[in-house]
Length: 215
Ligand code: Z5A
Ligand code: MG
Image (spheres, helix red, strand yellow):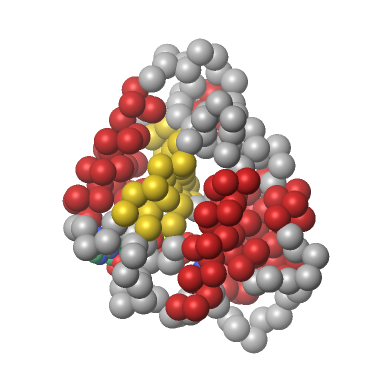
């Protein structure tokens, strides 16, 4: 078997990403690993966690952006080993697109798309990204509002910036496609089936080589 496939689930807050990452990971088990960003268990992840959960913990917007990116870089070797050496699929919860969209939504002078993307250039790129969209607000779902970015008007801006980011990072030959899935009024199981419909052909296809895609 050639290398495993890298499937990324993105979406706004409480869209159900973690729920669906767990479902997909189980479906692909034992040939799968699940991962998430921010990966809060590392030293860098600890700083990110403090920033997200403690609103009085101050940090320049540039610094926290670079920490989110560093957090992805520190896990690259592990991602490569999992896909190429272990030949397992990875189901990922948030990654580069979240990194760019949330920072762009802050509308900080100088932090334009190129600036935000610069530090992520060269990271391993997913074979497919699934973007969960809910046309109703997710703010009634459990846990919403506890962390720094969880405010309705900010989330609307983030949605807009996700769309821009997907357009800017689209590849000409449609390697690494983004599939948008509308989860409005759908049950967890219904969403799971919609995701499986687009992911199954990707995980079922043989890779021509062990070569990984890169941003
Ligand atoms: N961030 C950033 O700024 N830069 C970066 O580079 C990265 C991230 C990587 C924390 O992320 C913050 O970091 C996030 C972006 C920023 N800030 N915001 N906002 P996180 O991923 O750690 O956040 P989280 O705490 O895990 O929340 P979440 O990921 O947004 O939630 P979710 O994973 O999408 O939802 P869930 O946990 O699967 O589900 C939430 C609840 O809804 C739960 O009770 C479920 O049972 C329920 N649920 C799920 N699906 C359904 C359906 N279909 N129907 C009904 N109920 C459902
Ligand atoms: Mg989550």
